[in-house]
Length: 115
Image (cartoon, rainbow, N blue to C red; front, side):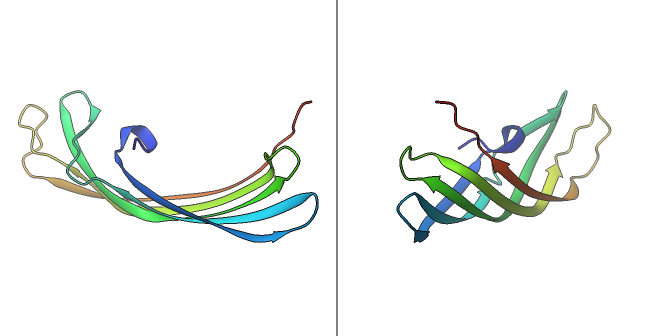
């Protein structure tokens, strides 16, 4: 599965119904995200790297039961790990370089439905 900026990996997503009434349903989601550390990336010309990044996502959705579409969505994602840049004599990279990375996303959306 393609992830952010060409990363390849896996997302295991689990949903649970939290509450409901005659008009809406509240659904929560949790996910584990992990990149494929053997997949080669090309972040720049002739530079090759791998990414070993993993994390968690928490989400909540308020679903309109009549349409089945969400009206409000919130998501919090936190991932961390390392990019490892491979040896490249042309670019003067003599040893593998590990660069720590941390990505945090906190977003909420109000979705307007047009009839």
